[in-house]
View 1 (tube, protein in one colour):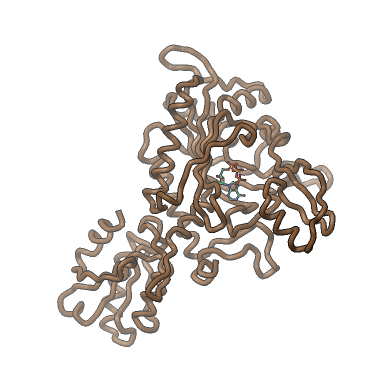
View 2: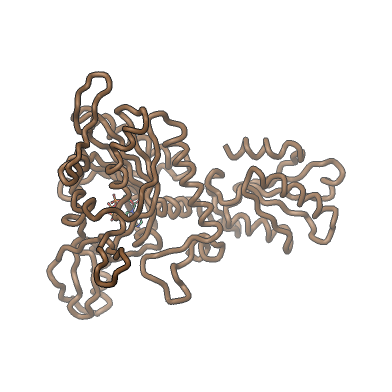
Length: 426
Ligand code: ATP
């Protein structure tokens, strides 16, 4: 957390006013990391596939959406209140409850668990007293399902197919915490994958997406032994799920949900059909058969991904702190330094390289202090490559390229730099 603040990854939300519980702001490096995660996800899910298209739906939706989706009735967590100090906790989070009991030095009394709805309310309209109450979306999923027909009518996509979306969701979490892990405002990246309504198809695609999503995280650098599948027991499945499995991450605060893969059956489309009075059926273009498809969903948190990629990348040793982020996720791909800031010919050449590389990569510039300090700063920022322009560069148009994880250096011709970097990053 200290590194995140110091280097500009993540700051507490509204900090100068004492903060706002469960909100976080991403700084200059954090926004790059998050954008890179989203870009990689979109590339693999939408750009490289023919069976998935993307949308970007509104955060504010007609409140009927949330009645239909079951969130008004069932999007609840069990809440208990400490009778001594009125602090509120989730009844199913035993660790926090035990911790709180210790703070009173004796065993507390608690209220009976009551259902607490997590939807965040907002008010829309210009007439005071006549504003309509709406909800900020509690999941981005419903924006996809209400557009199911629009997407079908405006594309040539056929079942099985998916609709992908990335966007903000809001939850009045009872106990936000563990840094950004549980926030009240967060981003999700989701695929709703529509399939034939049949048990065998459901199992096939559920397994397919579990495998895909696990591979995606390991491909981008999360250690295999830090990830595991956890199937939901019958009693813990969300109201919409026929089958549910989480990808859990071995966080410093214990194994924790990273992403959920759910078989939502035809829950969403049948409820929207019922509540809107509009047909949500899919018509098979070949057979003419009409049916409500089932949906396999993969729902991951962008903020949890940013946090877990950071935790997994964090390395301390040999007196160094290094963020060994995958080069595709690293905020800056490369940093450029003149060996000495007071030698104009070195600065000029380094600036030329910097200006040229900037057109293709996120590039950092640093000419302060000694070279060791500059390397250390880039190591903490996760920058995989540092280019130094030295006196030899003036003679033979080569530079040193230092690799973050090994601190080893290559001598590379300036004209070869772009290709060298593309090659290493990919
Ligand atoms: P939890 O059990 O941790 O409350 P959930 O099962 O309610 O999570 P889902 O509704 O399945 O979570 O949401 C899908 C994904 O969205 C989660 O796997 C997580 O990555 C992310 N997410 C959910 N709630 C939060 C939150 N409060 N803060 C950050 N990310 C979240």
